[in-house]
Amino acid sequence: MKMVKISIIGTGYVGLVTGSCFASYGNEVICADVDSDRIKNLSKGVLPFYEPGLSELCLKHSNDGTLTFTSDIKYAIEQSDIVFITVGTPTNNYGQMDLSYVYEAVDNIGEYLNQQKIIVVKSTIPAGTTRKLITYLEKKYGLILGVNYKMFSNPEFLRQGTAVYDCLNPERIVIGSNDLSQENELVDVYQSFSDKIINTSYESSEMIKNTANAFLAMKISFINDIASICEQVGADVVHVAEGIGSDQRIGKHFLKAGVGYGGSCFPKDTEDLCTLAGKNNHDFKLLKAVIETNDRQPLLLINKMLQTFGELKGKQITILGLSFKPDTSDIRNAPSIKLIEQLLLLDADINVFDPVALNSIKGIFDERIKYYSNHYDAVANSDACIIITEWNEIVESDINTLVENMKHPIIFDGRNCLNYEYMKTVDIQYHCMGRNSIYNYKLETESIETVKL
Ligand code: UDX
Image 1 (tube, rainbow, N blue to C red):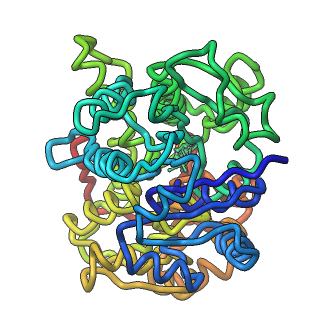
Image 2: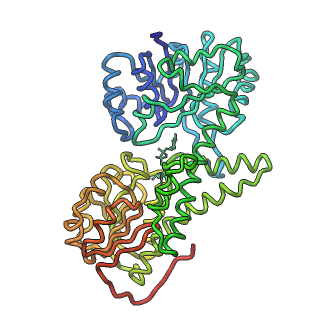
Image 3: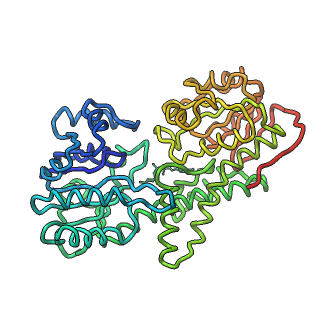
C-alpha cells in the first residue's frame, strides 16, 4: 500500500475526522490550523468537540506518529504531496456563504507552494467555486493548473455522530477534476475504496454535495408535512413512513417525522442552494418550501403545548435533549434553540437536560434557564417535558420513574422516539408528531392560545 504525505488545512469537524481517518488508511497526515490554542489542545489529545470514536483514533495515530498537529501552515504545506482544504464556509451576516477561509487557505498554498502538489477542496462550496480558485491562483500567484499543481474537488458526506464510521466505510467518493481522461492521483489516498469512486467535473462534484443534502432535507420536510396531515385524519405517520419507505424507489431513510432538521449542514446547504439557484435565475420554490416547513416544526410543538395548558406562563417545562441530533455536542441550528426562545417569549420556566451540550446552550441562554445533567432530576416538578433529541438514555428511560415526580405526567415527544404501544399502558398524557395523542392522564385547560405559524 502506497503511503501518501497529506496536509489538512482546517481542524474543524471535517478536517479532524478526515485527517485521522486518512492516517488510519496508512498515510502520513499533518493537521494544520491558524488557531494555535486549538492545535496545542489537539497535541495534548483534547478535541474541540465530541464525536464518538474520534479522540481514540486521534490518540492512536498521534502515538504511532502518523498524525501530527501544527499551527505552522507553511510547514504543513511544504511537507506534503497533497493538501486538503477543510476550512469552514459559514453563512455571513448577509445570508451569503462566506468563502474567506477557503481563499485564505488558497493564499497560503499560493505563497508556500514549494513543488508540484495536489490541492483538494473538501470544504462545501457553491458550484463554480473550484474553477474560480484556479483563476485566482493564476492571477495572484502565477500558478498554472497542470504545471504547478493539480486541483480536485472532493466533497465529504460525513454525518455527525457516526463520522468516523462514515469516513472508514464510505458509500461513495466523489472526485471532481478538470480532465476526466487524466490519471487521478487522489486514487492513491482512497486505494481501499477504488470501487466507490465517482469521477466527474468540478461543477458536478460541487453540485452532488449540495444536492444530496437538499434532497435529504426535502425528505424530512415532506414527511413532516405528511405528519401534520396524519394528525388531522387520524393516521399514524410512523406507519405511513414504513409503508412508503418499503418501496425501494422511495427508500426508508430520512423519513422520521419530528421537530425538524438542524445542524451545520442541512439548514445552511438548503439556503445556499436557493441562493445559487436565484443567482442563476431559477426560483427554487420546492426547496424554499422545505425550509419553511422546517422552520415551522418547533412551533407545532409549542402549539400542542398551548392547546394542552391554555397558556404557558409560569409553567415548568423541561426540555430533554439539546444537540441537533444524538451523539454530538453540536447545537448549531438545533430545534431546541428555537423552542427555548419561543417558550421564553411565552414566559415559561425552563429546565434543560443534555448529556454533552449543556455548556454550549449555556453560552446562549445563561441564567434564563436551569441546567441539569440528569434527566430524571430535570423533570421533577415539571408541568410537562419535551423530547427534542433522541439520546439513548432518554429513549431508554424508565417512564414511570421519569414521570413520578412531575407535577403532571405529560410528555411531548418531538422525535417519536418512545415506545408508542407501551405509552398506551402508562398513566400519562403522551403527544407525538403525526400520531394520535394518548390521554391516559387528563388535565383541565382554561383557555386556548396558539402561536401564529
Ligand atoms: C448531514 C448529511 O447526512 C451528511 O451526509 C452531510 O455530510 C452533512 O449533513 P448531519 O448534519 O451530521 O449530516 O446529520 P443527519 O444525520 O443527516 O441529520 C440532520 C438532521 O436531520 C438532524 O437534526 C436529524 O435529527 C434530522 N433528521 C434526520 C430528521 O428529522 N429525520 C430523519 O429522518 C433524519
